Length: 449
Image 1 (cartoon, helix red, strand yellow):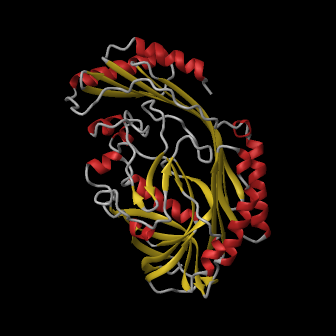
Image 2 (cartoon, helix red, strand yellow):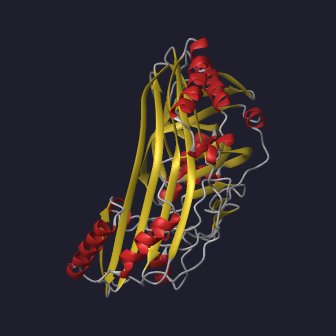
Image 3 (cartoon, one colour):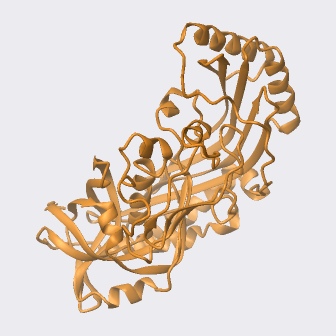
């Protein structure tokens, strides 16, 4: 862990030496450790300390960027020189509004000493509990437990300096037995929020219950979706249309739906980087404080999230959702919401099942791919437990299915929302989501497993 004082000195001195008109430096640092297991055995322990520093400079409206992973003055100085050279050769970026002015983000506590101090022995002891449960049922466990510290700092030549340090822990496992499987996953920044034994018991029970699945015909069915499946829905909606660049380019599912009811009135989706029920980070990668943004209000898409550039196009201010523009893999995305919450309802999952006469209970989706962004049509497979519901009870397991479904239309057909929410993390930030009961969901194919 580098610490705020060292990072401030490093970034401030580098910016002071920059020959560019404007200079922005984003530092991401992590101390992460991971224990991975499979076949009921720990097979890998790794720990990584890494720093990545991205420089973005402007010479007039000519932009350049460079990246280094050496947190030293000379290396950072060379990165700034490279970025400046690139900027002098680059065409003008006409819509560049300049770097943001300083604003003071609201401090958010998201650091847990227990996570920061989680040793290899501690991780092994938690995994041993999981393996013991799997072995006692004759099942096989595979998965990973990771924990560590993440630091982020943003500084620019207009006087911005923001720093945040937080802890992260993530546990996921798959239990397998007789060709069936059960899955569990959670994320947290506090160690006390992870119930390893409870997650393992759920996954074991799911795997045992999912054995000997029966065939089921493809078709449109009522479904009860566990939060793992809901995570995929919200993630695709975020990636393909909750950012202002997607809306401005006309490729968002929000286009043509803003201000109109497009989903069930039971659906409200909010992005809040300061809510400690998620994985907080109080500012974005331009150093702009994160605002709590209601993206869908009781079924009505209200508006996307903004960074400085997309906000300037509409005469607005940034909502604090910039991704690190200097990284090539992020540069084309525009702003994204990465701290999403779906508002809880009032139903227990058991109550949702009781209200389905004939339908399917789906644990999670897998290998999902976007087919059409304007309706957020996605195709993918079910995985780790699908069950037939008959007369309000889970009757028996069924084989996995392929679905092709518009996720906007799926959320329009929600008739119950779970009271309990789960914090899950994926490739783009975190989501806290409930289970959903959906009256119509279209499955287009079946499997032999």
